[in-house]
Image (cartoon, rainbow, N blue to C red):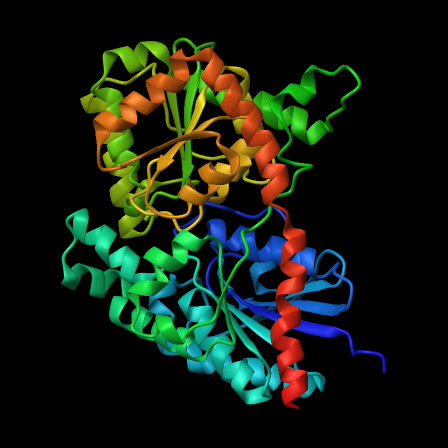
Length: 463
């Protein structure tokens, strides 16, 4: 008998989610997870046996944000759409303030599928808020519930405590007790917990009381290899780039040149949200306190997108203010680029290739990183990496052999690793080539299609 095509519901509540021109870095909630779920939905929609993928997120009707986020439905890709349902205040709200409104979201999601007359066959929750909704939605329709944490509360508590934040501050700013309780429930009830790396399970999920009850599957995220191609492809006269790519490359070269006196020097490149956990101030201190490192390379930090620091959330405002103060303290004018904006869709791939062509290095100095999608993007473009050794980067470097892992709390170690790659041309070239090959071998989206079959088969057998 023919099998009914599968309807998959991905639940990712917070952030700014749309199927085009993602505003990565627009705020603290719009980063790697946003990109992950949008690309995952698009790829799953093309899988054999998938009827449709619904990416459930929150509807945001706010004059400070694009009207796209207020559209109830958005078709994108083949067999994928974004479903936006409101909960809580009408405008944008950061994720930590959404927890009291998630039951309202559950009710609206149930009503949406009941009115459609076609419930999902499997529900996959992302992050704690998405897990809360997905677990209840799956229970309502008696279908499998999958969970991906992306980042975990207990890890974040440890990292923030090391950075000097008190428990009270964590409670007020991040609603940690609520988040951790939801994560414990998700581990107890999920049919499958999807992790990006084995390290994530061993040093993240195993911190939870319910970790022994969970069933895990390690499936690393993929990247779009057509966008993140190696820098040397452009040396081939037959290789063509579209106008948007050419404009983006020119724009990013010009943007970096606005800040630095010698734009021809190698670039130490960092790309992240302006979040305390990303540890960018420590990177600037490491660079600013080393005259030799400054002579070897410029530092370019793309810390989200900003218009006016004063209007940003407290966490982002504090981090960006600290970056500017450190730039002044170490007198890094002419050596440090801190651009205010970039287009994540077109500019970021060009940044990796610009840095690679100048024999630079990509660095992720985060206190903890569950995976580190920027690391495989850089690898695919041929840019060697220096990264924190706490989290998923261990698996990436093990798979790709394309960089150096460091203790991101040790500035001397960061400086040594950067200098090693900037000075040793043979090592740089080997890591560059390894990264390109390793990214293509280990990080493809196709592996995700098979993940949903096991819990669905189990559910069918039980039925």
